[in-house]
Length: 155
Image (tube, rainbow, N blue to C red):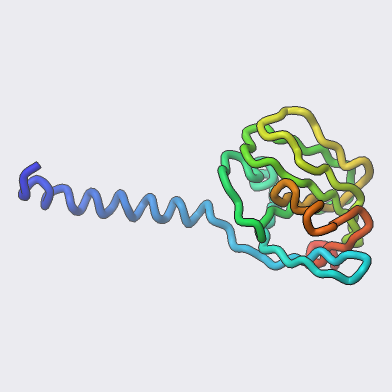
């Protein structure tokens, strides 16, 4: 392209870059601190996105190709009930920690299968689910009965 054509396209390209930047920022959600405390007192701190509404819970970690080791997603269901999760359109294998209203972990579904439509049940009424990279729970010794500390569980 000639220089005059590039000069004419500069405002359009700048506007397009701005729109893409804003769209990316809109998808990025603020991270919140969350700790998992073992019965031995060991604390494991993560930075999590919190899915508090139906749209965010439906989207979850779908289409993501990576997640830092110290991050995850907390699903806040807003009420205590049995829940089922699935991995449709989710490329990352995950550990799912099903959490009671008092913050104790009811059960862990480890190493869930990416892209699967098989439902993964909480097994009992829960208030939330924490998704971490697969293998994190085993690596850190996180087990059912351990406690999750986050404002969601302090209501």
